[in-house]
Length: 448
Image (cartoon, rainbow, N blue to C red; front, side, top):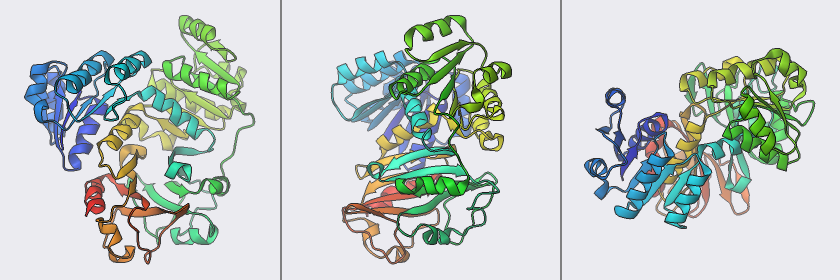
């Protein structure tokens, strides 16, 4: 495909790099000359300097022959204009736009109608959904459902006292003979990889398990993770994410305390929310957190606009005794340190936006894509066509390159972890996990 990405910030540059690595022709449009110079040094993609919301600049980028247009600037208004110009004037086949304000989402949808090829991503909504998916799974840094929830990929940091410490991956079948449990990715000493059966789990590893949901509690027990003393949540920051999350938790009848340093913002939140206790104060005030019961909460979510403050607040809450801590962090350099600091999970609207956009960019056979922590590993749920390389021989004879793992197969109403002697049948759904360096091979493996 020929793809145009408007906006060279974190989301746009990440998308441009990943889509280009899949073999597509990518043009990145960015208005800042300083950023254009930096992008030219960092990425092997064509960069056009100019205002991407104007027709001449889009024409220079090649919109007349564009297959997919992505609007990812920091301005909802600019993204709206870019998406509508691409949709209504140039009839670009696929258009995706990042819109953070729900009112803009409504307007965009009313203009483009129910066209499935016109997608608006709200990173804040995605962040709230991610937090809600993590809360029921103690200790998880990431939770992603596949096969309509019949299988989840959940990432955990392995502690020294965990029962998994020292276990060979091939022995997982002995521990869980009845239901699928498989390690699909590991990070050790900062290096990501898709493992094989003779790899060993060690303390300090960040391990992603593909798990039948009925086995999640058993996996968590072996990892040594626990629920909090109380089913209560503390939120730091009356941001749009904080307010949305509080509303959702109120709907679930979960007691919520929200801490906000701005007096006007705290008063506004108190007026909008129904049962949430709103406290005016700093989320990095140890005495205040202690007084408000941070030691007993099941989850502490720091989602202020200051991401460094979010990290400090989570560290304080964890030290006080909060069972699980979640920090909103979009700085890649800062996010990479989180596991070492003891914070359970990073919520990155940037990565969540990238994951949705990558899903949209894939071929029709790919039904779901998830970018795992650090964006270095991807998981694909895909329907296998009869022409696919996967149906030609048993898995052991296919010669799949290292770094690509067929982790699970949906066979009828069952999910199985395939062995080397298994052969994939046309029409079955598979879960494929791959390192970012190998994602360009997925379409080739699925299509021929």
